[in-house]
Length: 215
Image 1: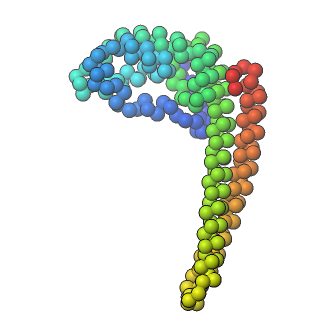
Image 2: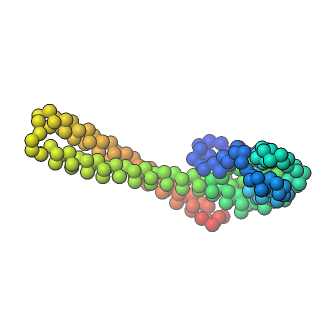
Image 3: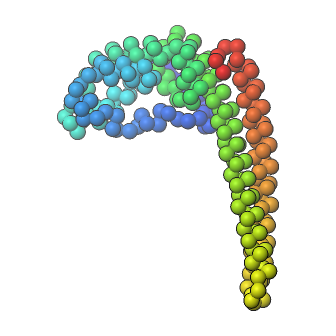
């Protein structure tokens, strides 16, 4: 089976759901002792896991002196892959930003991969939109926070009983806060521009894909 590599910045923006593959605790003690390797294989195949997933199960079960049954696991996993390697599932996996581990046969990839890549495109632009929106919200919150601080410091400056040294320190802090407000406003403008661009990208990609997928 071929392994497709989705390169470039696209995947860098995605949620890597396959990151859990490296963990050893893929099965509980009860699951290991039950030894239903066919059921486990089918579930892993339906989830798009590579055959190396069995190695993780073996490590998890070794502490209970249980070894996997590769034949039962592998055969059932192939059955599970048939429900994974489809056009519909390709779209769903890409749409969720999940990693594809090159598990489908070449003839299956001809249906799976275009849908998967289209799903990744939409996932990426939507993720960019959420990032820009979060950045704008953060910048606006910083502006509000610093404006409150500025108001408090200006009130403090006009208080009675302050020494010249204390007033100088307050004035210095006021200048700092004003600079922080300018920085936050600049960040807000940049985030707003990024959000506008991201919103346009989402609309463009959704329109492009609307005839083929439920977007």
